Image 1 (spheres, rainbow, N blue to C red):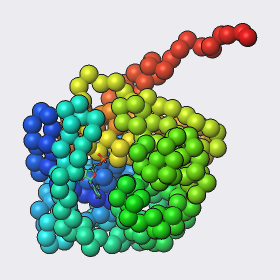
Image 2 (cartoon, rainbow, N blue to C red):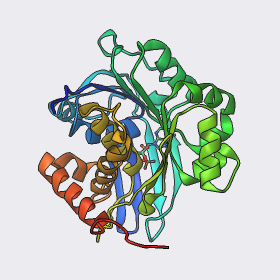
Image 3 (tube, rainbow, N blue to C red):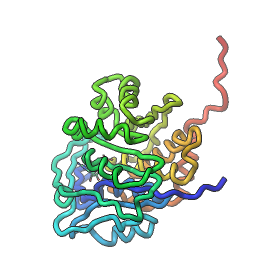
Image 4 (spheres, protein in one colour):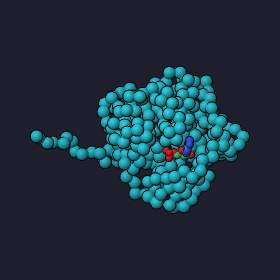
Length: 312
Ligand code: AMP
C-alpha cells in the first residue's frame, strides 16, 4: 500500500549543549529537543521546523537539516546567543543533573508558524512553556495528530496552562517520573489512567533503558529499548524517540488500528541510534537501511515462536 508522506511540524529548542560525561567533557555540541526530533523524523517524512537560534548557531547545521528534508524557514535567527544547556551524567549514564541553563534568545521565543506550515497534518510540540504550546495550536489549522512533550519544571511551575493543553493534544510523551508527578500517583498504570482522563487519548511513558509503555483505548503496549553494548550519550534520546514515532505515523496510515504500536518500534530504534554517539552525530549518519536492520533486530528480540501454548 502506498501512502503519501505527510509533513510534521516540529516546534521547540535548538541549542548548544555542554555535556559532562564519564568519558570526558564535550562542549558546544549541537543539541535541542527540536533538533533531535527533526533529525529522527526526517529519516521517514518531511519536517517543518520552528524555533530560534542566535548569531552563533552554525548555518551549515541548518543547511544539513535542509538537505535531509527539514524545512528550516521557520527557524528565526536573532542577534544574541543560542540557548545553552549544561548537564552532567552519572557514571552509569542512567541519570543526569542540569548544571546550567542559559535561555539567551530562547527567553523571548514566541513561535511564529509560517503560513505555509499552518496546514501541517502532524504537530510535535516540543518541551517548551505550555502557554507557548497552546499558542502554536491556535496558529495551526486542525492538525490530524498533535503530540506533546513536557517536563517536571512545567508540571510543577505551570499546572494551569498544562491542564488547558492536555485536552487539546492526542498524545503525550513523557518519562515515568514526569507522569507520576503529573498525576500525583506512583503506580504507573493508575497514573496513566488519570492523565488520559484529563485529555490525551494516548500516553507514552518513556523508561529509558527499560523501554516505553503506550496507554491508549486498546490497552497497554510495551516496546523494549534496544540493548546496546556501548551507550555514549543519552542526550536527546527522548526527543529522537518522539521524532521516530511521528516519522512513522506521517509516512503510514496513522488511523489504522495498532499504527501507534508499530510506530513505537520506529521510535525506540531512533532513540537507540541517538545514544550511540555524542550529540546528534550518529543520528545524522543513519540511513533507511540502518533503520531497517535495527527494526529486524527488534523483531528478532520479541519473536517467541508463535503462540504461548498453555492449558488450564
Ligand atoms: P532529552 O535528553 O531528550 O531530555 O533532551 C535534551 C535536549 O533538550 C538537549 O539537547 C537540550 O538542549 C534540550 N533542553 C534542555 N533543557 C531544556 C529546556 N528547559 N527547554 C528546552 N529544551 C531543553
